[in-house]
Image 1 (spheres, rainbow, N blue to C red):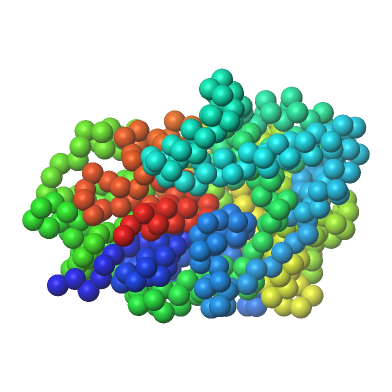
Image 2 (cartoon, rainbow, N blue to C red):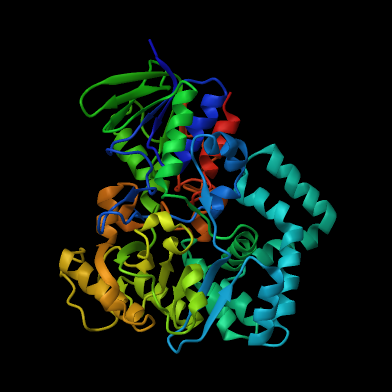
Length: 529
């Protein structure tokens, strides 16, 4: 006899959103997590030195704060301890020669900044954001809705009626523009190109990828509106709030519970799970898997009574993963003293890059399996607007390298010895981190003297922490056009249902893709009765 309505495998943001929403509907939910803690890519630890609190992987909450999931769950989570810290200067870029651009949450300031870089660029930015604002409802309906649904069909039909068939076709054509083409034909200043180009990497894309321009516009619009907030005290406060909410609604969470395989009833419907220790748990209504496609179909369903459909087999054989990610964390004796302006120390997420061509080069090198000679570096400065992250007078840095190879074929810089088997080693990780630190130290006064400790995670280390990060890919799979939107994860996919009754698939590998918005968990939970 089933004790639960739904069993959810995995405990990332999508799983937690689904569990919380289903609990609010009166469903009894069980969340099973194989690790010793919930959260997926949300993980907070003192990894460098006592008193220094680091978000090991994901940290920026803008997508969650502006999501429908937060709209539905925000008051419940805030009542259970969730609070956000905000920076007035959400992002910026710093180039090797010290030129830099700082982007704020103030439209007038941004217009003035861009005008100073190139006359007319400020007015252009204002016009671009106004145009996007007019399209925002349509864009977010496509990015965040169930694409195979009558609701989305009505949204598209309404837009086509307003614009005309040729107009709507033109809109979609514009939406597929690569970021390079958009930036170079829209803004005169290459500093503005440098400001926005790195953000394509945070979408699992590159500057030459189709639809990367639209994602850059989405990000620009979102961070000017809501900034780059973080959870006060670390992402763990969000997890704790979710855990309390799920339990308060009658749900249950079990960590250290590795699901070995899924159970089928006599009719071929998903009936529950078997844990690695042999425990069987049944579900009345269904099983929700927040995993990669290969984890679901090749591991959890390896003994399924019926064969996989041909379209699933084909989808699995062609499903591919994107570039790896690397994280580097510092505990510092004092806040960084940036050589080219004190305001740089107030920026939540600062990119270090030579510019648009530099981003393009590093992304291409990583895609070809090369360690980038000059990586694109994202520097997070959480202690500058959440002092709880470090002891008084001290600080931390959160570094992300979004263009790191999963399998190493060589070093584009020509100075690092790479293993013959292409696998990450501890020595290579630290040597590559030294390359990053040298770039960082070139911009910060006396940086080496302020470092208390450094902790680096290679793509292989990240996969060890979370098996869904295949090769260190934090996006659940390649995010190019052919493997996104209605084609994620497979060409035959229809929303979050599978070919098995009662079995649902959510997570970064499913629409609407990666990020902390909890989109797939929200969409599925909304659709289930």
